[in-house]
Length: 441
Image 1 (cartoon, rainbow, N blue to C red):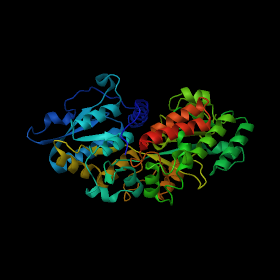
Image 2 (image 1 turned 180 degrees about the vertical axis):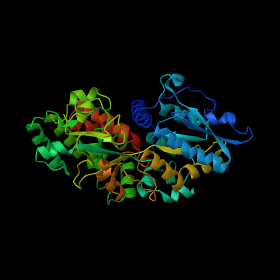
Image 3 (image 1 turned 90 degrees about the horizontal axis):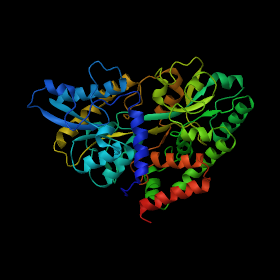
Image 4 (image 1 turned 90 degrees about the vertical axis):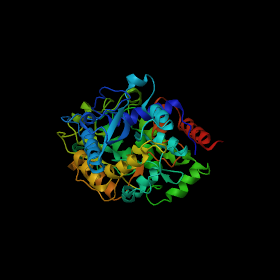
């Protein structure tokens, strides 16, 4: 399994994942020392597990649910195991031009810490090098959704486990669709027809877009069959051996995106330069009812700062595929250094923070999808269509550590080429080149 990744791909994957993890957060002070604010009050003789992550521990009065939820589970581990979680924090100032991914690769390879929060491409690289401990024997691992297990398995070993699964969907203004006499589309053909009608009705940009998330349309069509009835292990093995081509899987999705661009349903020029929630039709435009559809992740429906509490009827659905609406899931994961100084303690921490009890607490606090098949949390009403699909195990994965070619960052960059004017054939040639590099051809 190839552990080689172009620097530009690592940077993109790091930015995308850290932007998602750290939305509305501020990484405070940093350094190599322990960052757990409780350490100062702990018994100096207590065992410590060193945890490296993008953010330091939240202060007790922090109001960010994403961080406080994670910290609550870490506190469970401290209490149950009688040890201290020592936070070691990444900030760009400390590491200058190095991305979080690059720093994680260096630190895990030199066993500087015990426990890490890792992006998918780093999990692939370190898992292939044997630098991550096998987690398959942990009690918490027995409760994982099968697709989550597959997505974090490298060379037959489960090397990472997430605390949440991030679901991406299509946010739809149902009032606009009703006014235009349209049903929410399920297939690519229905989607294109809906866009045609919406444009005729005066909505110049039917789909709000930015430079990060359009690859979700590609993944939905590329992997709908693979993750919903396909032989995942056999098909991934064929891709890793070069016997099957990623370009064959992804061509229909790229052709679909090209049609959206050519027909003016997406503002490609604007999307290419826009950050998340800042593209034409996104953010304020969508909330003001000026754009019928946008792409975003699950949490955007939970917060007032994105698409929470709209003045219109909103519904979050899966992306169009020949199998119908398809949520696209991505995830980061916790991993333990195989050579960690406190390896056994770190593994014990994993078993606590990823137990069903901890994941239930995490999911209820963040109102997110759990990687455990035993944990379900009610969602806000607009998310119900997307949630129903996920709970029925109908979705595709945009990150899979078992695939030699990193998915999310790689496809994101190639979609940007498409936005910039590249042909579908040129995009497929780039995919083939990445696959050939990974297979050693």
